[in-house]
Length: 293
Image (cartoon, rainbow, N blue to C red; front, side, top):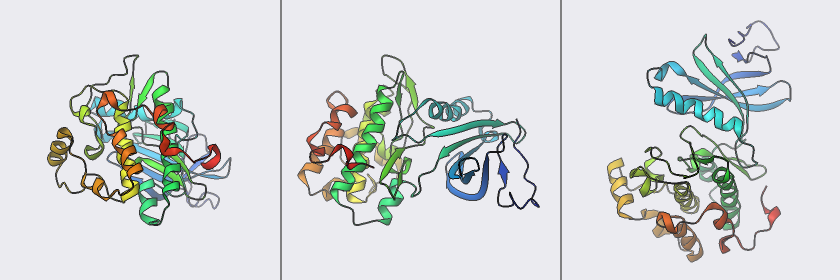
């Protein structure tokens, strides 16, 4: 179905630039974020009276790229399939053939990405960062235990979102995710170089690549420095990662408990714990079950 053209003289909808086919969601022109193929706009759910995010992808940008097309539809399919308090919820999906766009509505986290939030609030206790970390792990545990298993493959603070008024953290942006069979093995090289586990480059890996990336997220939260920020090219990052050289930011971690936990996440694949195992780590001792949002 085509999208609903907004009448600019209708005072009830004068702020909307687009409305979904069923007339429930209205899109504003204000952007929440821009990716390589996707734009995310502020939008409003007129039925429930809540703010939402309108994700829009111009399919013409890669119409001849079948792999990219599949990756695009992959995110929307995965989001519709999942239901967990630490996973961004998807409310609706539709294809606008007339304007050659794929649109999907997701919940919006009021404070944006965890990276932006951490940069804005520089005085954060270790306890608060542990709460965030535990919620990320709970989301990863859900993905990795899903039938079939889902590997996110692009875990980073930019793809994790937070409601600042509650401290609720949610994993989003599933455009690079992979669904794997019972072997839990994937073979495609995808991700953000600084957060990619060494085995990702070898094109033979399992869901524990997300644990490696999670460890680097914890490092970023603690140091407020993006891992391997000292490298100015992807080639330099690759050389350091493949040789097992840790990011210089590790030198800024003074708390031995924090360093031990991060190193545990960055261990070699067979030694790397699962999300479930990490949730039982002593790193989280002292946090009550209701300490999260």
